[in-house]
Length: 144
Length: 144
Length: 144
Length: 144
Image 1 (cartoon, one colour):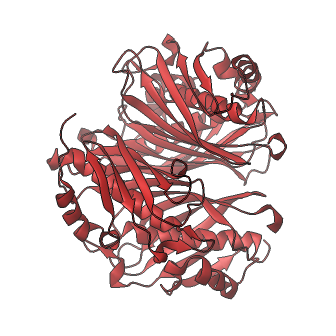
Image 2 (cartoon, one colour):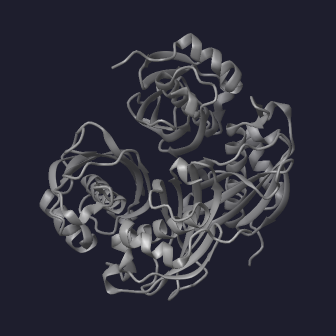
Image 3 (cartoon, one colour):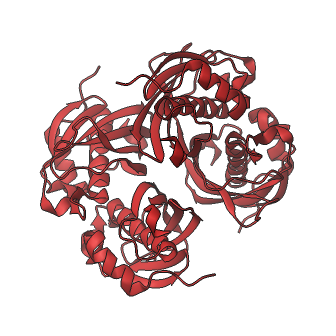
């Protein structure tokens, strides 16, 4: 397995510009390898929706963040990688608290990178997938 | 075609509680019929992402808002309708400015309601679909 | 609107090689324009599944056929256009009988073409969408 | 982990009626546990498409078969479980030869069961996912 082609610091710099909404959420990168990784979103009350559960848009944004990180771990620090599709399935209501997103790339083509993200709520059953996301990024030709 | 089972005012009240992030975006409901409608998101600079285009999370949230409205137009003012899946395809970069979301329900079952949303950027080509969303809501059994 | 870049006859020739399973179904092309069209699958008993309804794989194959046709109407007779994703939502049970698929392209990029397909069962309510498909084709760079 | 609620023999009997197209493909069930399993499709020339690769419809049908099996392993021998959505991403061209589908259920609700399927081509790189499928089955209320 090659080393990841983006460092944690490089990725967080790119996110500050490219995903400003998420950039100030203080997402913690637990692990980052070539084509996979894990991140934790520390709980904030603003992520709640009625019923005491984490909102859908929060999880979609976190999933997109995690997928972006895994894509750049393969193609390098390329801000112009963009999401072309993001398919989200909301499976269980996440308990209020920190949430973890685990991402892996399943296909890294020259132009399209595809992966999935599993999201877990650490304050509930930490092994129960609450949301499952699949998505594709388009990568500029020059970056490979 | 029956009348919509939720009024604009009732829907906006539900959104204040259920989708607080969107509730303060001043989304304007252009039309609301039984199972379909159209909404406009007035431009704010905070919706931008680098490149001068509207961000993906903004469009996903708007699409979810529009689909929720169309679902309630069929099932009535039911706050506990929840998204079970939301599949987003980002097709073209939306020009900065107001965006319109047109929604229609394709299947209204007893428990699942499915529809799609087409999003247009009014400052660019107003007939060019920039984002296409399909989604399913789950409706509590008692509401039908 | 430009003329379609593939003729009905050219498309059916490509299908004979590229989609042999569907090629002998005698699908009838009702209309073919630039980026959209309509096809009819004449009923055969082998399409049935228990319950007297048309099977899911039959509808997925028909949808893929229709999308392929709409893609080639834009890029020309290019056999190497390939499906990269096909998302199918089964909405209502189709009554046994002929089925119609209406397709439109929503985005024709240089490398990716995205569209959707609505399927109707003519022996039932001919205006009730029984299956909704969205899909993306990847097109070789040289063809544009 | 409970025992699977359907046996291999019971499942194959249900498939004979419910998925007749796949029933005569001689799919071999490698493993079947509660909510997960693995199956192998022995190669036949009729599965090929031009380019010497396994066709998309073949893989979609196999994925649906595998997901059906995993659903019944949780809900028991219920022929009326039906697919409500099937989202397929074609990632790599599978080498002609046997293919394996590995399935797992990510959410088993009272009415909806969601899972994903990874498909591998054993004659190529047996660890390279060639196709990724996510799907939802709807289960009649009485069966749980």
